[in-house]
Structure formats: structure tokens, C-alpha cells
Amino acid sequence: MKKWLRRLSYLAILAGMATPVYAQTPLAQLMRNKLTYAQRLLEGMALGDFRKINQSADELIQLSKTAEWLVYRTPRYEMFSNDFRRAAEKIVQKADAKNLDGVALAYQELTLSCVRCHEYVREVRDAGLPLPGRHAVAIK
Image 1: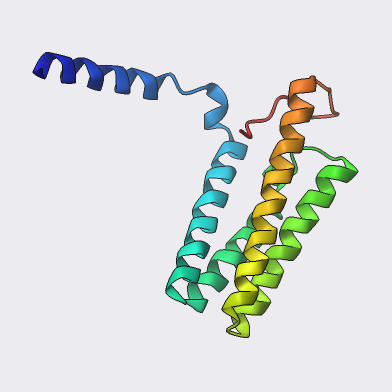
Image 2: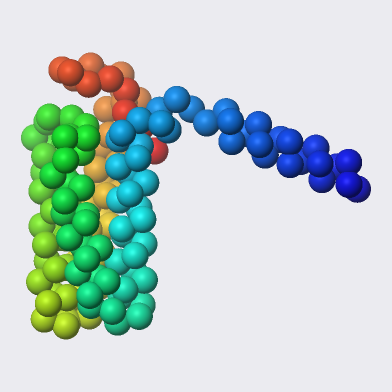
């Protein structure tokens, strides 16, 4: 049994080392940060911690203004980015007003903007459409 567990642990280590190269990119790090802030925001909602909600939404807004965020320069991508930013700004407004229901609705909008954008980016990537100044992206 110990041998079997040891082999499994070796496999887990090897799998970790076999992480695709794109997982090391600034965009991949940005997406991990986005996930972390979104999870903190959800935690703040669950705890009714408006300060944590506000801080997390602010971090998401700042991420959306970075150069790494601009995966594609297309009208559709810009629309998704603007939807995301507006939803995060609405979260800040609702948190300031201590309106947890409003925060929850805006969080849902934020999440939907992420899902829609990631679908779009996968479509573009899978279609192999070359866009100026961009290579394959690391969004899953």
C-alpha cells in the first residue's frame, strides 16, 4: 500500500511539473488573481462583510484596467470588459449602501460577464483567428 501511495505522490508531482507553459504567463497570473478576488468577494457576501466586498470589487476593477487584461482588441471583447467593470463598480456602490441583495445581483452580473467573455475567447482561440499583436491566450 505504501508503494502505491508513493507512486501516486510521484505522479502528482510530475503532473504539477507538466503544467503548460501558458500557465506561467502574466495573463494566467492575472486570471488567478481575478479568481482570488472574486472568491474573497463571495466570502464577504456570505459574512456580510461590506469592507471585504468593497476591497475585492476594487481589486477586480484595478485588474480590469491593466495591460494584461486586454487579450483582444475587438468590439465584442471590449463590451465584455466594460460589462465586467460596470458590474464591479455596481458592487462597490451597493456595498457602500450596505445593500447585500444589490451586491448579490451585481455579483451575478459580474460572473456572467466572465463566463461570456471566456466563451468568446475560447471561440476565437479554437477558430485560430489571428488577431493583431496577440497569440494564443491562456484562458480556460
